[in-house]
Amino acid sequence: MSDTLAVLPQYLLPKKALTAFGGLVAGARGGKATTALIRWFIGKYRVNMAEAANPDPAAYATFNDFFTRALKEGVRPLASAPFVCPVDGAISQFGAIDKDQIFQAKGHHYSTTALVGGDAKLAAQFDNGTFATIYLSPRDYHRIHMPCDGVLRRMVYVPGDLFSVNPTTARGVPGLFARNERVVCVFDSDHGPFVLTLVGATVVGSMATVWHGVVNPPRLPQITEWHYDANAVVLKQGDEMGRFLLGSTVVMLFGRDRLAFDGAWAAGKPVCLGEKMGETP
View 1 (cartoon, rainbow, N blue to C red):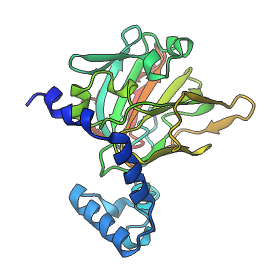
View 2 (tube, rainbow, N blue to C red; view 1 turned 60 degrees about the vertical axis):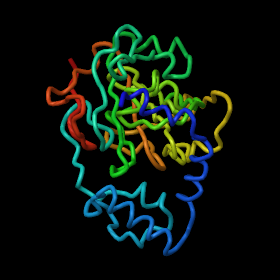
View 3 (tube, rainbow, N blue to C red; view 1 turned 180 degrees about the horizontal axis):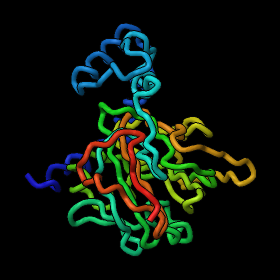
């Protein structure tokens, strides 16, 4: 079956209704029922609870508490490098931005302007720069950390669809990451500006940042921005910057001649938070 046919049911499913229901279930304090759901999830997706700060499934009051669980101190040491991987996951794609075009999958590209919500001036800072797209599977640790030191300048909520973001969907849905709901976080750094984009997906209950808290819901109908120049948010390399409450993908943008990816990186490769992502050229 082709990828296009495989994702066809997603066009027909009531994705927003399913996501809203998933958010209610994930946030419910269901006692034994919640614990049973967590145990089932651990078994189905082979979650390594030995790495969790609290490995006891019964200790989590809600599924979201479990899903956004903290790691034990020291299990993800930071590499000594200018740029480190911000999440546990798998590399979907990475490399050079062709003028303003980001490679999604065979036959599919999308623009930096579309990704950041239509702001052509912001997107132009990344013309011929570099990008990395990392997919977080259900079993992964779902907090997002800083790849390098950064000062937050803007956060942009962009409404959109809620397609799955798994590899099959990336191959089958044109413009997937610039089509789904997302939260675009714009930083300044010693390496120039960079963007961390948190991409929503089917049954992703919400996305949150450490400076704002939960961004969605509510799912606003229009692009909404927050500016932080007057109240600087300064984060160090490795600091937590946000988290997914179920699901998803992070897309990073860096400027031209700012990041040379580590030679060990390859599409499809599993990666861990804190491992070396790249050097300055």
